[in-house]
Length: 98
Image (cartoon, rainbow, N blue to C red; front, top):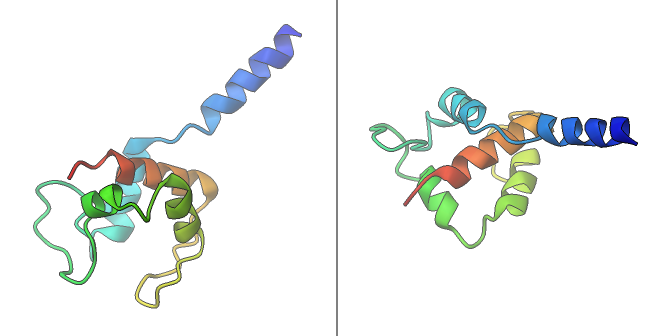
């Protein structure tokens, strides 16, 4: 019984989102178009900032994860992110303050 509980706890820790990894993904893949962090000076005027996405009622964690899994936007590239990478990126976006 103790082994099963230990394995369950280990499984939960391995799927926890990592904001630092999300920031790295955002910097690499998103920052050319989106303002992904406070103080970033470059980004497109035609796309929302990460803080705007964070405060949007249309993008809770579940909807944002679904969108990043299959972007429905012709200008948004298909990044082919893993579920863990999506979770990390969503955690980073949700950590942004308006």
